[in-house]
Length: 326
Image (cartoon, rainbow, N blue to C red; front, side, top):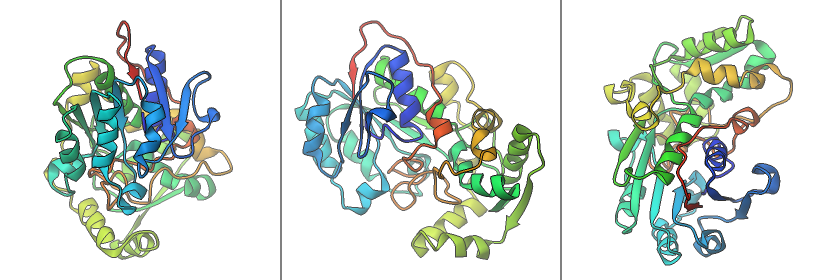
């Protein structure tokens, strides 16, 4: 599996290991400290597909996650898929995102996987619960959350739920050709998220609403202007499709998706301990590597997992004689 050190990748590794699967965890800077004891790991970059070959030896299925860096570097997913086929990989689960389904982002990565000849499953998550880690430093130091569009609610999703759906698609039959839009159980606004953080901490946390101009000024420090404007447009007036709660997590896992409040309870340490865990996402991100997928095809969320989320283990469907998964 690629992206093994990200905020979906870490719980996915654990879910697969707990289910007894043979896993090779792949990331550009992975080390033995990033994976459970005894799990095989391999350093590789999708921009150099040939370096994937050692990790794919004997693999039947692959969790495919592309980063913003891959797209920015002009990465060729077709070349990656060629290496997969040559190595005997028969099934790919692609971490895409909700923006492909709504038409807000291009479908080029999904199209490439569909045309590759392998069995495929598409995961299209919306915004991540863990995007709230962008506020961790201000909560720790000032007990404040500052964000635009305080009452605009979207059904954010737990990365651990995405990981469990991915584990099911990698291991259990019946997911080939499926496209799963993944959301949380209910829309939640930044103001409501702030209240959930305060409840988890047992202390007041103030919400300070930024104007669009203030948010724009902040985002321009790290994003190109067209991406900033489209991001603010989507956050300010999201279409109905982005507000809709999907039944897919419940359908695949047989349980409701985890709420934002549940995620905060599990990750409260990030908001109350001194020192920085490091944000998992760029500020005000809808979900993912904006400009390369965001809620779109490149895949959601920054790939660096914060320590609290990285320690979360997800359950998985247990199958006899598990396939080897990369």
